[in-house]
Length: 68
Image (cartoon, rainbow, N blue to C red; front, side):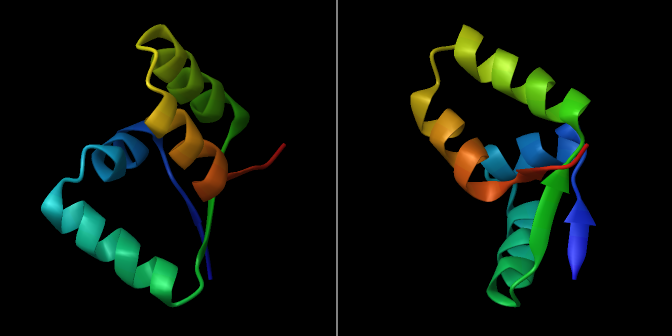
């Protein structure tokens, strides 16, 4: 199954909010695909770059697929 994440949900996963993270990990184990729209991708990426958050940038690149 495919899921489109908004910036708030993706941020909650990165911040490891327990309820969101539990759901996300369960879906990932079930081979779910996660997508973000280009606007969300660049919004999140820009925020991580501004913070020099390299670990989060790697997570972003490994985790989501951008659709156009």
